[in-house]
Image (cartoon, rainbow, N blue to C red):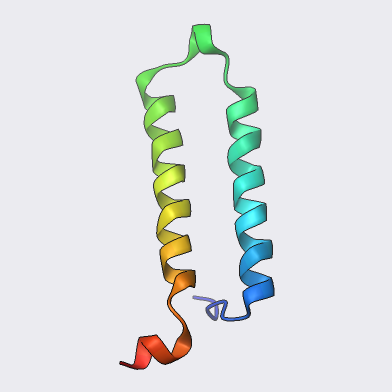
Length: 65
């Protein structure tokens, strides 16, 4: 597994890239053909983004406590 991202600038870049991937997936969905599994996957992607944001909010000094 790779090294964690601790640099704030790298964290912002990472989140922008992930958000752009989410938006690309959202743009490709055709509402009339969307199934429950597609919506579940979108929800999972949002949950993953939220989880990563929570991880990035913890500073290295807070992790040690």
